[in-house]
Each structure stands twice: as C-alpha cells, then as structure tokens.
Length: 173
Image (cartoon, helix red, strand yellow):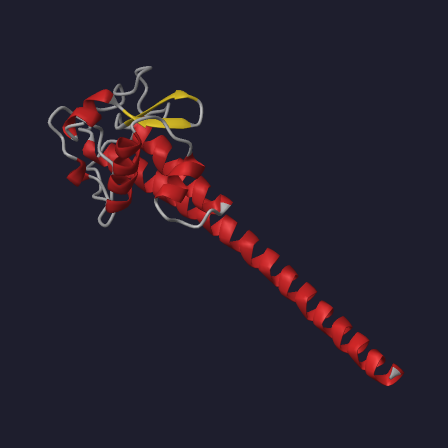
C-alpha cells in the first residue's frame, strides 16, 4: 500500500513540476506578446504620423504651430515620400462615411453607436468578442485615442469613449 502512495506522490510531484514549467513558459510568452503589441502600436503611430505629414502640403519651415516646422525644427525641403501600404485614419469631415476607416475602426464605431453612451475600452473589447486580455484592451485603447484625435470619438470623461454627435448623425441614430 505504501509503494502505491509513494508512486502517486512521485507522479504528483512530477505533474506539479511540469505545470510550473508551463506557467513559467506562459508568463514568458505573455510578456513577449505584450512587448510585441506595444511595438506594433508604436510602429503604427509612427507610420500614421508619416502618412499624415506626407498628406500635408509642404510649405517650408514655417508650417508648424510655432512657425518652426512640424517637429519643432526645420523640415528639409524636398518631395514627400508615399507611405505605401500604410492604412490611415483620416480626420472626420462633414459628409464623411465610416467606410473610409479600416474594418476594425468601423467595428468600434458600430459598437459605440449601438451602445448609445460612452464605454471603457474593456467593455468595448468584450462587445467586439475579443479575448479579455490586457494586451487587447491596450491595443484597442490606442485605436480609441486615435479616433478621438481624428474627431470620430470624444473622451469627455478620461477612459470613457463615445461617438461624437456629428458622427452619430451619419449613422442615422
């Protein structure tokens, strides 16, 4: 009887050890995923800034708010490069339809319009049917902030996002 209990204890210890190794590996993979999400978001922001500056007419060094150029210094004169493959979120203008937005952004606007009131990123993640991971909420929060910057959404309460009234009227609601 004791040999059976010893064998069970040995197997239990081995299983615990395997579980612990899996947990460590999962933690490492989650950290890698988190870093990749942040890196992708940073690259998207850089590419969108590049796309935005490429879409602006080049007027020389005095085109920034302080008269020194967009980055605070003198911009080199020359033709702007085309950011081929960059999907941009345009600034909202009267008469603009959501079809100009990438599909993921259209989905966000639809969820917020259907909600009828402001929502936090975590609730939007759930409404979109995405996994409730922190990385998903952070990635979505980046998109939400971009939509606020471009006039599609408002953030009157920090962290609570809502469709602007002018965009809501485009949905006919």
